[in-house]
Image (cartoon, rainbow, N blue to C red):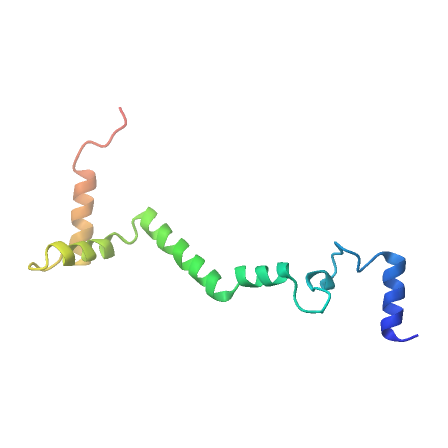
Length: 108
């Protein structure tokens, strides 16, 4: 019995290879080419898309936590106050601390 015939006999007895089978061949179509699910998953998990998603997540996290405040300040300063020099990172941090903690900070 050849390898293909033996495999077909096992598939016939176990039901493997039927529609909905969970083995590796389930993601291939009848011609042996990757099926629509495999192609869609490959596109979804492409390195470029995963990298772009990670970069977007990192930018959002930095914005929410205020980690990019100095970079945003520099962009704003370049657009609106081009004639004057911007604060240094240390000066910006100190002015932000004064701004945040100089007023009453309480809930009631």
